[in-house]
Length: 104
Image (cartoon, rainbow, N blue to C red; front, side, top):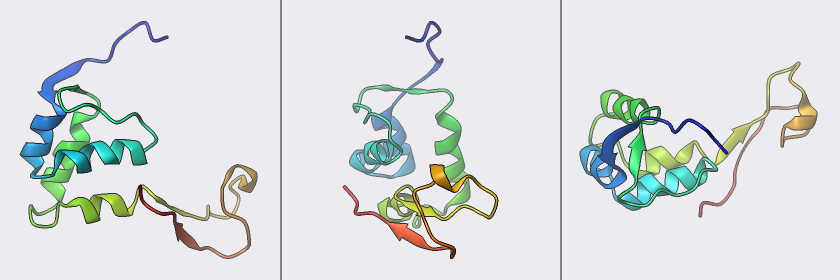
């Protein structure tokens, strides 16, 4: 389907999880929550995914970087601002609201 393969970092998901101090299951679960296939532990991380992990490490203190923090956002949506095409948005109504669906 894709002619060009994305460049790879040379690091596996297992190695990235260890660097971040996260369980491997947490890291692979995030991919599923983002609507992407779960990577295998020995799959090599794409270069375009690597900055996300670097930003987490730079932005969050090590004691705060955990499953609870990382899995709060991917399963939530907020009603779009006025003017957005509401027919393509999962929320209905006139007031902003927040809804989180059950985790895996």
